[in-house]
Image (tube, rainbow, N blue to C red; front, side, top):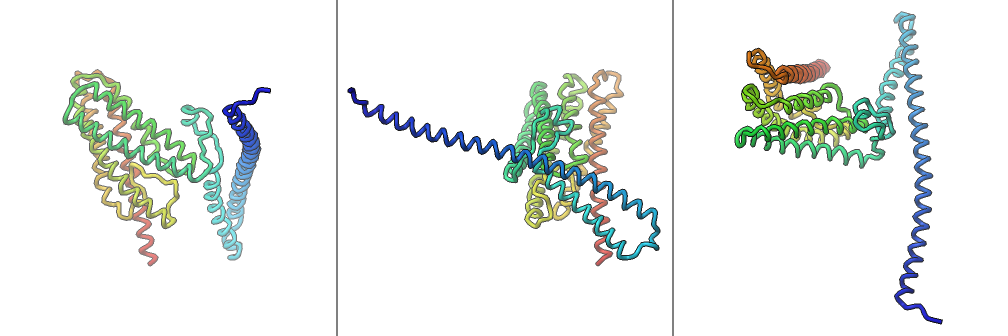
Length: 347
């Protein structure tokens, strides 16, 4: 019989080893699928239990309110009043606990994410993945802020080409669109950014899109330098905000006073009060610059040679941004002032 060459024997042994590894991989994958089905079942059970608890808590809240209305304060014993207060406090804590739980459970996408991504599950199921995505979001904002600053500086002081302006506006549209998608994913994963600071980016996306379509002409050139100067200043302020807010958030998280998924924002929130009040003059100046842009555009719209619809649409967008930013910032400052007053009275 012919003997098998040593080279083939080595190949056969390697194939046998690969076969053993393949069977182990199959067993591991089978176990993985089994555990995945178990996890999916647990997720559904947990989501259903939370929904039932919420429904029953809502019914209990209504029952307590009815009891309070049907019984005068004089007829209720102090012990009963204390018990009701304890239950109501526990209900508030329960709502917060449910919010924390749902951050690790799959949930239906909101309208915006459903339109953009469909029904894809965007919930990240472990803390490391959530923090990594949040940190990547913050780095993305910082890098794009620096790029937008350099781009607006180039367009404003070095090069004056409509094509370059269009590229700058296209970058703004892409940046704000990306921010709205990423923020929606972060909200689904437990970030508590909400209200005006979410809507603010939708308005900014619309404004940038309108600026992108504004054709070259006399009116465009009249507003161009003012627009680019505003964007230059806005990028500078956003860089300041990121630098100081990130440091403040790090300290507050270390003290356990802020949620780990909280983000830096373009505006001013109550947790920024310590050491960050110096940002307020910069923010208010930016808000009133938005008003100045709006008034400039409305005056341009009244000119006989004004034919572009972009003029009035940009004016309305800047007015919405001004009112939203100003009133939200004033509301936060007022609330913080009242809270400080209450603390002073207690002391």
